[in-house]
Length: 86
Image 1 (cartoon, rainbow, N blue to C red):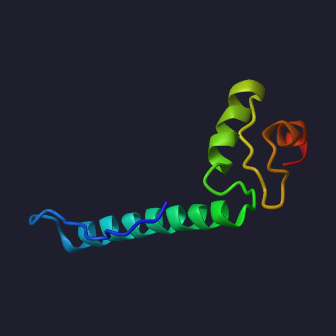
Image 2 (cartoon, helix red, strand yellow):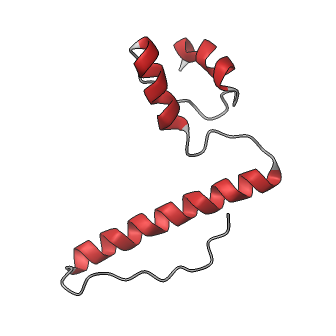
C-alpha cells in the first residue's frame, strides 16, 4: 500500500502544539504503513502493527496481556503456545 498524497490540513484555530501533535501522529502512522508495505513486498513475516492486538487476545483468553517480543514466531498459534515466555 503506497501512500502518495501526504497533504494534511489542520484547523485554523489549532494551537501550535496541537498542530505539531497532529503532524507527529500522521507521520508515525504513515511510517507504520510504509514499513508494513515494505515487509509485505519482501515476504518477511513480522509482528509489526500486530503486537498489541495479539496481546489483547492473550489477555482475553488467558488473563495476561503480554506483548509479543521481537523475534517471536509469526504464526499466532505457535506464539500463543509460547506466551508464558513473553
